[in-house]
Image (tube, rainbow, N blue to C red):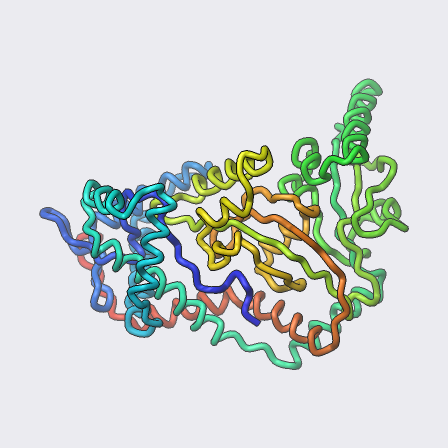
Length: 436
């Protein structure tokens, strides 16, 4: 089963400072060198220098120990060679992109940058880029993404025996008490804290519980108040068998249904907890599923639009939508880089397992009409809004298809890495001596 978010979409640059090195045949400038020859393409030394600096900046932002220049440069070159291997393969084996479709993509780039087509051409020229190269670059990106999904999905095989084993594991887990997804707001209490500190911490937790009982979104309060590692996910721990959760948690939410909040605080060695049952799966979980009607806004990070900036833009869109300055539908139509943009980002109804895990986890944590924080997936960065949910019966054929989809998703990354390795092994790659 193909995930809905895997439909081919284009990683469009929202800033036009330079073409992506992953899909550009560079023009060597005076004094530049060929760092590597990859099939019928080349990697310029200037590209390696630029990518090395970008890797250094990313490591610095993450607070990591700075790698030595030689090692970082090799990492940059390897990444560029991999980029070239993929794009040259896509040019020979990818689906053709007709001019009308490419025209629509270019127009979308212009619109997202609030430029007319004439202004786009002028902007490109000011950056030293010609319009034809810009179009060719976009075409390469589209072909590479589409051939990647086709080839990787074609490599993933799921047998009936694997599906049987997967379902047996689920049944065993359900037989031992089912699965529960609990969200929490934790107000920690330091070990050995004085009575005054304990009272202050309890009051803080009681205030959080009162806000939630008063109608505030649990996830919002968790992000603001909670002191545990799941706060950015709205306090959600994730769906787990009951025997893998702390006994005090299971006892505290006994009798609560999905969506209900424990009426009193839980005191544990860690502090005070406000608990909510996000989802509870019982013995009938295999024959019932929760379908979600959601929509999203997608931005695709690139060399020109770092993930951090894309995330900030989406956070600003979220603020504007929630304050009533604009609507989700309008923003999706104007800026989203997914095929659902013209429908206001509407993804329709989808059963559990229909989206990539990181998207689905964030979606499942949302209340009705809630909007997520920016969510990173392999397709880009999303804002997600849940419009409706419903529980429906499923027959065993659907159960097995859902199991197949879950198993395919587990195997995706490994299959992708194997495909890239096979392509590189078959590619002609010559690294020039200037890097030695």
